[in-house]
Amino acid sequence: MIDPKNNPTLRDDKRCSKAPREAGASNRKPAANVGPTAPESTPVDGPIAGQSRGAPWLRYFEERERSQRATSPSWIQLLRKAGIAHFAKLGFPTTAEEDWRFTDVTPLSLHPWQPGSDLCSVLGGVDPEVAARVPRFRDCCELVFIDGRFVPALSSNHESPLALSVCNLTRGLASLPGAQFSHFGRVARYGVNGLAALNTAMFEDGAFIVVPAHCVVKQPIHVIFLTTAEADQSAFHPRNFIWVKAGGEVKVIEHYVSVGPTLHFTNAVTEMTIEEGARLEYCKIQD
Image (cartoon, rainbow, N blue to C red):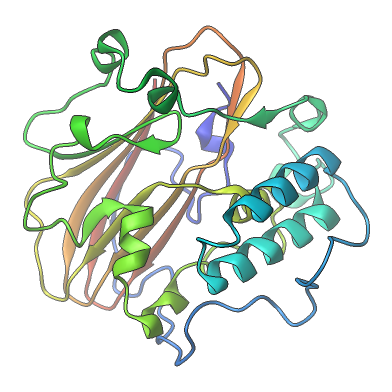
């Protein structure tokens, strides 16, 4: 499994850390638009043009974009197109870039990755042996994803009073008022980070956590990504969104577990917006 420490999360969370913040990773005020817009310099209409440093990914994107055009909101389509356009120019990071000068991902960029399949859908449910491998912590709310897909049956809080604030990304984005969409996709630096751009284009689901102002969430939130990768050379792109409003407090554990024997690639992005006076304790674990 590719170490998620090297994925483009939006803060340097390479080890467990407490993160009290007086000003968050993003303190932008919500814009009046209905969703994030792509940079003006980014072509988002028609076929992806220009330099292609990731041709297979462009093909996968175009195939999925055609299949989801009728169901995906227009602002999400624009965001995805901006992501793939930037990835076509940037490609995978190289050691010529300051943030990656000690990490050579050339083998990763040359590997013939394919979009990961949803094992739960293939099997018509969760394999009990796989379910038994899901790590559990005591006294936590839990969001469980297997091969990139949310599994309500294994998650402990999807019907709790916090369901509208702690849920999977697909459901969460549908619950956001239009003006608040501007927080999503604004923190990830997909215009300069090739892996963030690839995730922006290809993400399917992930955790959605919004803590209301002055709300203290007592139970830690344990977000579990378990990968079986039944198909060799599978790639997954989890996208997590954490927004702690003014005076709110929450603890989040982001946990990646690999149980399959095959080679796979997990390219996760976590966006965090922490408002004034809010507190986020965040820990990332890889097993």
